[in-house]
Length: 97
Ligand SMILES: [Zn+2]
Image 1 (cartoon, helix red, strand yellow):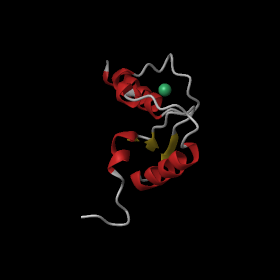
Image 2: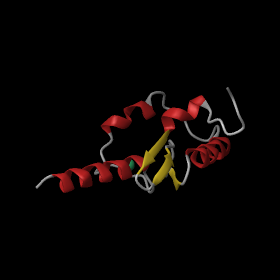
Image 3: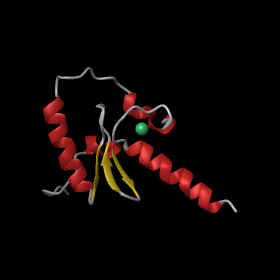
């Protein structure tokens, strides 16, 4: 079933939910977010892709390396993956007596 609020399947692995809200991961200097809903993040990503189409070289597989993200080495100015990593490390610190 498709509705007007459906999120494109190509966005599914680029949207990330964190404690602070939804982020859309981009190949550019800044990720998009946080947004209150996945739909808002998806819409922002659609606009972003339209605006950046053809401007940057595509690096196939670059987004698949997200699980090896190193927040200490990250040069992004607004990074959804860094936010997620920070929340993760904070939760470990809280859980450790
Ligand atoms: Zn980062």
